[in-house]
Image (cartoon, rainbow over all chains, first blue to last red):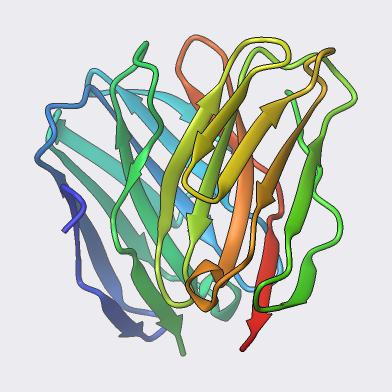
Length: 113
Length: 111
């Protein structure tokens, strides 16, 4: 366990489905992030939440909708996805200003059919 | 924003050989971080460098920040099969701690 827990670990969904990814951190960090990792691209930052406020939205399509109800929880709501959205979705947390890096969860492997 | 480049994307070594990889930027970096992702795993933070010329060691891994703070290197002495994985460099930018990753280098080690 890394201190950042993501569920589910694997998800297969149809293009018309709605699903949510969940992330929970037990480290007392004040910032949380969603990253997308696909086979041929580097880790792509999707969203940044600092002190529960969204401070970054990296031109992500509106079919991805993040939610951060408190500093320990982060969700990614998915609807009407496309097959090219199939990827590993990684949640991370950090303590802003600290001299150590991000802590990543194990990720959700998403397949859109 | 600041970007970092890692070339090549793949490298194969014989177990016991040394391995060095580089992370380069066209602009001066305030910091550099290194992560390792094992096959099927998630990125794990290894180290952060912030000072010009800084060198840090973790067992067989040596990390260095260039004097001009435009590049960084990771050197592994006497590679082992446990070193297999993808090594990413990343730079932290902005007031909101945005971490931007390089494409990574995937290391394979022949036993």
